[in-house]
Length: 115
Image (tube, rainbow, N blue to C red; front, side, top):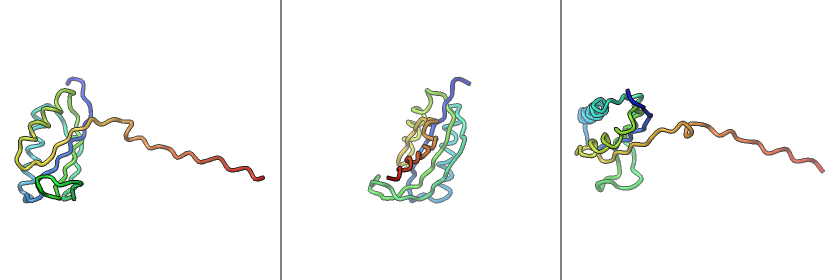
């Protein structure tokens, strides 16, 4: 396989979908990823969440967060193909960067000298 990188794929589905329809959409996402020679590292299913702003005049959406391993030229094509699906409200692909996962160590202030 060519040079790969890790990506986060965030998908917001229509909140009115049944469990079977949500599973169908998850299968469609998985098939798109496989078609473009990617692998799903992890899937976080956040479920129904309130949106920060209305999408399609709705205030809720069903959230799916995928962690993927893909070649560098594939994320845009996957994103474009998922946007064509009727039940997908939003799609966002972000490159995962290791420096985002580091935790900053809190530095304690030096003790003040007593006068």
